[in-house]
Image (cartoon, rainbow, N blue to C red):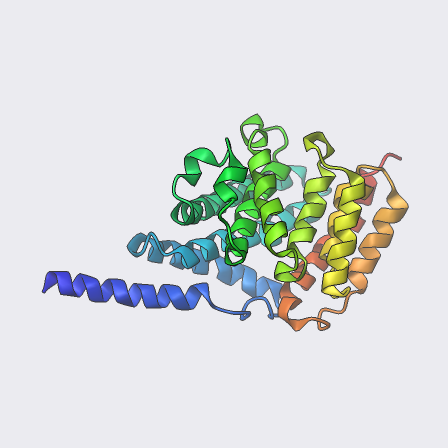
Length: 287
């Protein structure tokens, strides 16, 4: 009887996990970033609680990974950018928290990756191409979020050699995803590659960053501000081209959030970040 009860409980948890990991666009279509920002921590803790009962539920592992990554970027790192000029100490604390959240998200993706490719955890940083060779098109979401969470941590902490040393594995993940389906997420892969190619110290080039920018804008048909902000932050600041920086951010702000309702929330949050970057431009460019 006890065993039967446990089985029923596991079935119930798995059903909830299936529903949550396929929750659609209930968050992404929202027009109130603060409402979603307040709700997400509870949702993420719920995901973690469910994973205690179904630790090998791969879709929920990926959903938890993506949730922590998106929360860190949208509501922690973006806030850091907004307050950096006025309160550097708070911005530094927010950056540290965002880093912890990115790494927390990465942990869930690595667990899902291990389920999909047994032994990946020990081999990924040594022979990523071999580990990822069996990946199929339906693995792109997993590859993308593993790269996004891990890569975001590296980009936020360039002074952490223990993270930097893993960049080739991160690059292999995103490149494999792009090879399998570069259109996934309406250009999300290319948007991420703008940032990766902006890291010239890690082998990126501004020319390739611009190529990925053009492809992202093409796939999104100009309905997302993301590529404009990514290029402004990654390339324009590095080149100390303030005119391009401001032009790109103005283009980001000109995007209509209702042009693509399925990413309305991301548009509003990205535009919030664009405004903060414009307000703090003096600190990013030599006078």
